[in-house]
Amino acid sequence: MRLQVKNVNMRFGKHVALQNVHASSDGGKVVAVLGPNASGKTTLLRTIAGLLLPTNGQIELDGANVHKIKPHDLASKISWVPRVAEVAGSFSIQRVVELGRYALGPSPNRVESALEQVDLLERRDSLWHTASAGMKQRTAFARALAQRTPGGLFVLDEPSSALDLHHLKSMGNNLRHCAEEGDIVVAALHDIAFAMEIADEVIVLKAGKVALAGKTDAVLTPSSLGGVFGVDLTWAMDDAGKRHLVLP
Amino acid sequence: MKSRSFFSIIFLSILLVGAVIIRLLITRSAEGIISLEYPDKQFLMYRLVPIVASMIVGAGLGVSGMGLQVLLRNPLASPWILGLSSGAGLGVMATMYFEYTFEFSYFGSQSVGAIVGALLSLLCVYVLSRRRGGIDPMSMVLVGVVVSVLCGAGIMIFQHAVPMGLRGAFTTWLMGSIPEVESWWRLLIFAFTTLLGIIAVSYWGPTLDAACLSDDEAKSVGVNLPQIRKKLFITSSLLASIGVLLAGPIAFVGLIAPHGARLFLGGSHRTLTIATALCGALLLVCADDIRQLIDFGSGRLPIGIVTSIFGGIVFLFLLLNNRGRV
Image 1 (tube, rainbow over the protein chains, first blue to last red):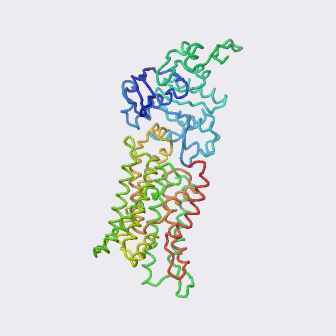
Image 2: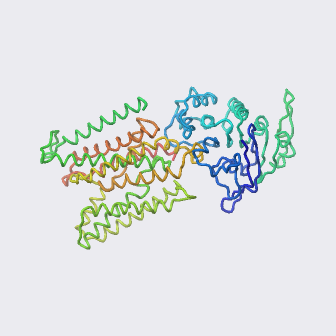
Image 3: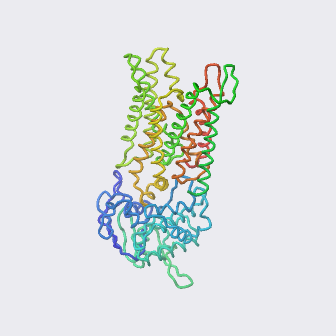
């Protein structure tokens, strides 16, 4: 599968959220989208996932415009994890995960496997509205895992903001596994260390424009990233000799 | 169907049968003594008609309320919030006024007035709450409230315009009352339409479940949101219109019945729709039972007062319980 973002512009009234955004990626890659607050990360991801129609430009999956694909068919190609998941109603965690199979038909095995992957198998009968923020985030991730078709597009908007270290590590492994199965994983992240850990490529947005893009190692350097965020960054070595970007 | 859902529906059905039997047997003597006895043949129709009408109105209003709660993602939504009941009310008031002024009366003219009023308010809400080709739930709530207020003002104008003698009939209708005399053909048509509406909403159950996710999430799992919103909007409005046509503006049943059903069944809308219809029917038959017991010397209480008193208390309870979520 090939994802192409072609000259995408997005305006909300007079506010320009995205300006001339170009990007592309192939199956098997994890792409991290980074940038300061209000730089257009969520808008770009919603546009890529076919949830928001751009003012100009288009998103193509294998040459097909995602905004012209019927909702039912789109569900088999793109899985979406929002920053904050919402459910109005009295549903169990398992039922929320099952909703990922709405368009694709029920699959108890996929649902059970997804619940297991996010460590929620034993809590599957708990009610959604009583769950913690981290559990809700894992539930939304599990729903997308139950929905995803290997080799498709997996779009996540800050999926790890409420996760503890154990579940963050687990999510990273799951996303890498999805990429190994041929998915294009596109995730907006604030955690630079996590992005360095899982991403093959990085797109850095600033004020709705692509400020930096390329291989993770090439893009995530103290000088380039520090310039975008307006802070001084430096490298630090851990005991294993691995480099990390840190605030001095 | 899971065993819990099955037994809940059986349980609600048994309660409904019990309430129907009580309504059939409950008798109030001229001295005000209450007893349970099988009615004479000539009075049987006067009991069967309100029982059937209560079940149609209650089930329809309940499912209508459930549909609107999903549509607006708001547990406090009901047919009232769309201004639909007020629109139908204005239609009936206008018909009564013109019947009086121009001295005409046709069979079913008030029904036509109610339908036209409901459809016009529906059209206003639908047109004014459209955003980017779909219905925006928040705009719909705001437009619904405005339409409701405007229709309320229209009702007051007609009330003010008629002579004192006719104002009593206006006020009685506005209180909501279950008919004791009604054409069986009309009841049959309403029952059939209500049943079709309930079956349709139940059939859309899995889509309603997925529509409970946020807009982005629902779209991403494959829900055609504009389509299901249109379907729900029209079906909920139709069911509520039937309720207003048969019994006038009866408050709170559309709000309480879905919440009552959720106590038994949880969130899955395929079975929840059936349970909500049963709960709505049960609520209205019970309210009709209760009103047989209360007489302040000026006749039995209109059913709308009974549902308003109990519904108001439950509404307050829901409001306080949902303060953090609504």
